[in-house]
Length: 402
Image (tube, rainbow, N blue to C red; front, side, top):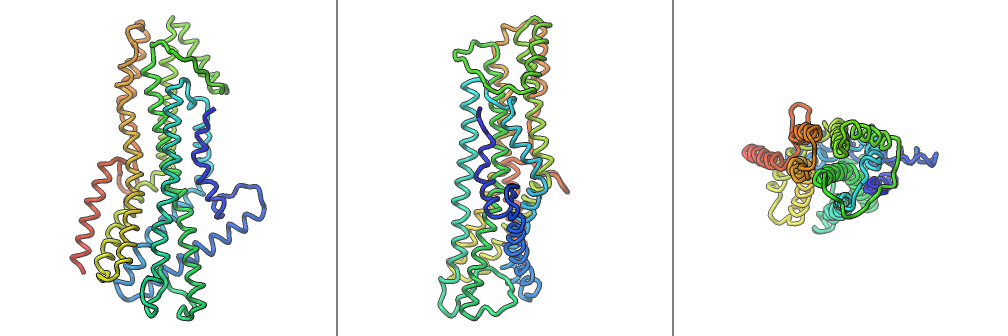
């Protein structure tokens, strides 16, 4: 059995460790989770909100806002993950169901590649995101001793000019920053991995279509037998016997698999519909605010500029990966018709060819993931480029108001 749900092990372990995913094994975990939410989320970002509302300078407001906008949206994603946890866990379980298991060595290779990509992407982001946080963490120590300050724009109800209080405040911000990173990465990579794995299922369907009617040189049997698979096999075999063609039942299985893939994508769409849309909105806002911040910085503040550039690139990569994985689903779904035309349809009788043509009309429609709230945004590379252009337009507008 290929356990595709293991692609999410690192994300789940990270969330459990920092108190954001109750495993249900320990009674004390509830209070640990309350502590983490209160101290490192609500209070941590409350101090930043107070700073923005108490500041009178636009430059100070901009300095706090460009990070806070992203942070608030990340908290919303975390809360969204908590609310939809049971639905997401069902998607994990569905990836391990018999219907999504490989039936040939070629299908196994396709799914293993998708799983490898999902794990590789997760580990890469787990390395890159803390690097951006590191640049923020070292900011207080790169200036002169007289200009040392905390690296997050926030208001605190205590005097941070005192060296001891400054160190404690710095450590608090450092912990808050990395705990924030620790729940941002799982929230984002779970979406990317779900997209990659369901794209692997679409690619696997294409492999099965291409093999239809051909003699398979290798014998490969899936050891998983559950009620769903038994019921589908029985139904397909009955239809094959009635039509007098073994390939008719195979086409019925393809139709069922395609339907299950569409149901999976539909569930993904329903869960992440608003999150995807607001990811585009927030990314556009952050590009503008960060670009404006870079212009406002003095030329000698090289490390400040580098830090904000890294932050902008992180947000850019976050949106790019969302659009890239969504674009792959569109592209792979478009190849299904070509794969179907490579099957050995010369062997099929009239009823089987008719069923094949019906299935061909079903797969001509692209499988598209969208964000839909006030308007519809398609997850594709074209949409990504449109966001970049729109962000630049807003940035030039802010610059003209300087």
